[in-house]
Image 1 (tube, rainbow, N blue to C red):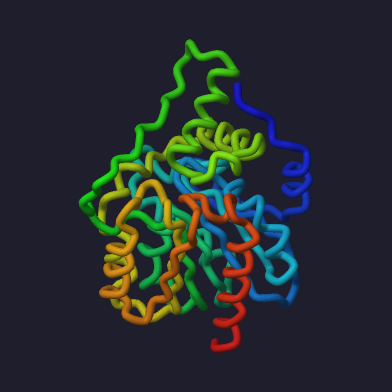
Image 2: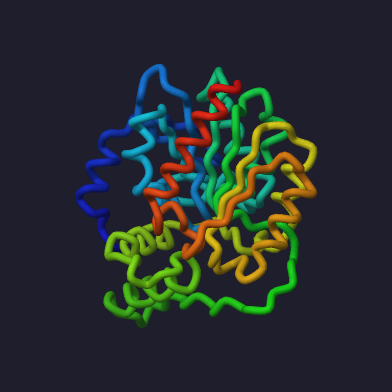
Length: 286
């Protein structure tokens, strides 16, 4: 049993056009909130997530852009890309779906695990990419940490519904959202829905160098943004800044005060403003 999608998010989903593409033995969905003639923006969610990671952003972004949100392989409503899926096969399946959908260039805005797949695709997809914005990226190497994040609470069959939801709320506080007052019932419902559907395990790649290796040597305009209390990276976010600046000296790197990992949900107005400003600036250049 998992939480039901709140009514306002059911309405948001109903407004989307859903494009389906082959993925393993099933399909992968890309939802589109159409704004004909506007710049195309593709949203890639985080680990154990889905398009729901962007529910506080889509309505605002669609006023400016033609917005697409993909469910990544083995997550949300997407099939696993193969029986023993890994980062490489997930990136390949994601790239294939995007290349089938788009015949002209677009912008990518990615979060967490979505940043890893985006970085892995950047070199091969360069002709289709106008800009890339990475939010809360991991996979920059096994950096020394002075603070260890508390482990997430695992769901067990013995848990009642209230216990499950309490655990989801606590996990959001440990991993996703810095200020507990910003964890609302919708965030808890999204966390419960997403984790209930998740089959692909992205945590083993968090301390790899897939993101840094992927962006190194690329020329697509790159913006990296993170909360200054991003739990998987805290406390040494400056080390990540240096790694990105070494890999891409032209990178725009920003830390947002008083925010955690799920930045676009915790501080949506600030995130949306940054996203709109970035994409518009790159659209003018390109």
